Image (cartoon, rainbow, N blue to C red; front, side, top):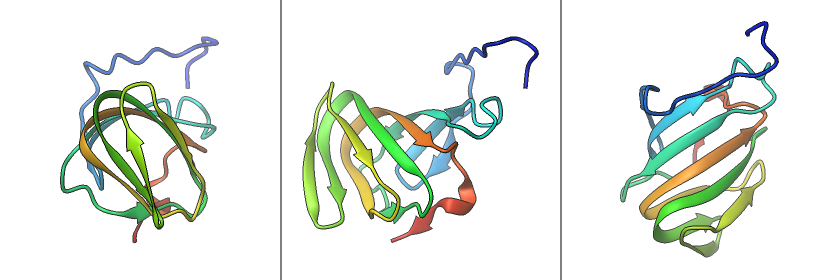
Length: 115
């Protein structure tokens, strides 16, 4: 954590990591004190269903089209659409998509479970 009252993330310099949806660039997890993190995620066609027991996720579609599978529902996705996913909801995004993901509290790999 910095002594400054703000943090800056340049996602062009953040290394991507593998996730059930594809590839995620993650920022601010530690800097926020665990309050939230911000991810830019490149969704892959073979994304895997998963869930979080403690985390609420906000998806905001930046690019592409597809859909989000949420338990037994299917929500169409296109740029400008945002979805809030509560803890315990099995989900996966399908399609060629680039999303902004805001996990609250900050992403914790121990809170990600295959579904």
